[in-house]
Length: 60
Image (cartoon, rainbow, N blue to C red; front, side, top):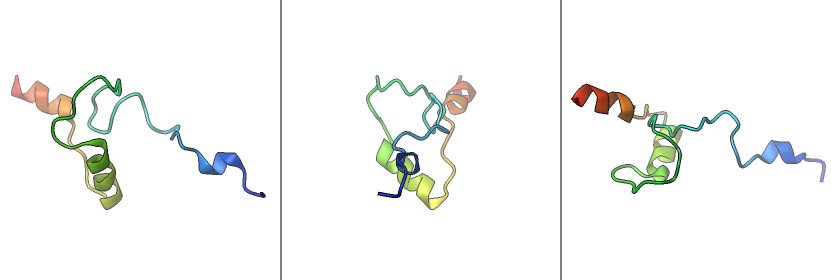
C-alpha cells in the first residue's frame, strides 16, 4: 500500500501520437507486417524500428 499509482502507469507519457514506425496512431488500419506485439519485442531487444513514412517517401 506504500506504492503510488504513478509508479505503475499504463500509458507512457513519453510516447507520442505516432506509432514507433512514424505513422499516425489512429488505430484505423489493418496491420500488414509487424504488429504491435512484434514492435514491442523489437523495442525490448534494442532493435531500431523502420521509419515507414521515410520509406514510402523514398519509394515515390
